[in-house]
Image (cartoon, rainbow, N blue to C red):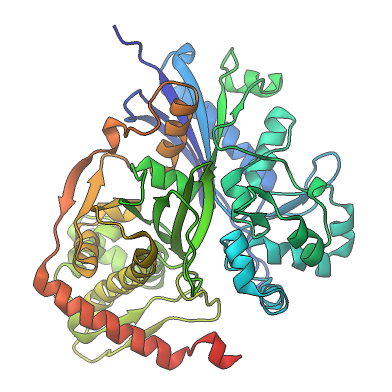
Length: 507
């Protein structure tokens, strides 16, 4: 008789913290979640409270364990997924000297541009896999801290991510997984460690002010007794350090080689694949991050994914709530209902969805949104569909760039909130001209973390997908819609270039 073991995937995001309990086959048993409050008192500044995130992490873990009704002795391990590109400073006692700057924080644009201009951004990209000209990357945030808060910079014993802060609080040690290290902008993909030259020449620091880099399969044991008691476990449960949330989502939907691609749309969006060697784009449209000794993840991410629909919902809240009441649906279901009434191409309406700048593939924090072709016959239904199509054109632009180096052929594996939208999935299938597969997994990052724990602790073969990762539904492309979308996609690129010429031309 097979023993049923359970595994918890912890997923610390920027909008929420989640703990999800899975069974041996990767099926979700219980999830607990708490929202995060983003602090944005100054334009371009986006932060989280480190201690609030830590408290939420403990509370969702405790809730997941208690409310699952699973025997605590059956919980065999935990895995840790965490949002990427965060930065904070701590003193010698491990106390925060700053709030946590998150990926959306754009205060360091001047520093990012300076680094790119003075240290050959393309050469840095080939070393680190990061397009350092964009303020997303902590290399520019750290330089901003040095220039604008010199006393804090001098006092800081360590510059760390939120995952490192949580691990230090729980276990009393500093360490960073190789993926989170590699998406900071000062990790060398070729040596597999911090780049001493970048640290000294650009930032003026040494490696002792950063955490030691460890493998994503590193097992943590001996959590502090006060937290063990709080969680009510009674015994120490091994935790695998895991990786970044994007890489864990990739793994959680079964993307384990360069033939497969994952597509994620939540608040933001991303397209990713796994490769057997570091791959770089001559135009720096995609990034490349380390994962294991023989695996890297390449892809690109959007700022503007589900965020665009959230903006529409909040901007026209009264009307959408009224419509939802009439239809007896939630606002997002109303979006699907209305978008489905508009033909592909939105009858000539094009929406460039740059509400908060953009990352891949153009990496422009200065771009802003635009609607083109709006006329008297268009309604909010057209705007909704055009927004969905606009986001998917940007997703396809990442796929197009990535395809030139990795050449994936398998169907695209979709995950994230957008998988609840039949219309949006069909738009993607038609734009990409690819089959889109959906599994039973709703929390891909958490499952990826739990899966990594299963494999690192010897409960599962690390090259075999879990039953829950298998497709339960697929969407097929429509040839006529694809032809229309291809023309509209090219038109949207022409519009973009006419308004936002390449930075090389501006410079």
